[in-house]
Length: 69
Image 1: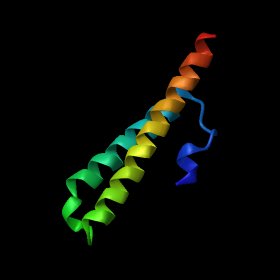
Image 2 (image 1 turned 120 degrees about the vertical axis):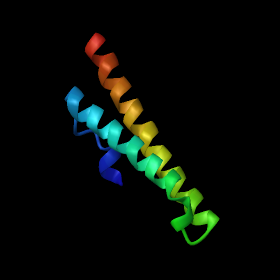
Image 3 (image 1 turned 90 degrees about the vertical axis):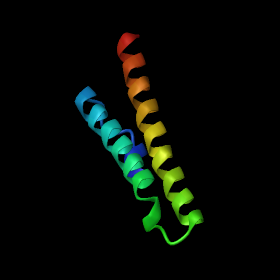
Image 4 (image 1 turned 60 degrees about the vertical axis):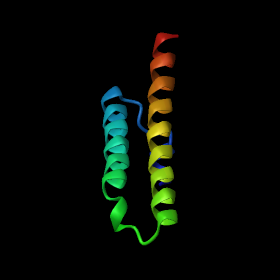
């Protein structure tokens, strides 16, 4: 999971793909809530997936802001 928050990709296309994948993963967790062994496991997975979405969106914003500077 550390790879998602690493500062490696800076190309806008890479950032878009990273964000899209994080959103897709989050939605997959939400759709498949019933496959987790407990509510706590599901909530933990959802939290991790949401953190990836937030990290990808923040990364995109930082790169966009730096391009404007």
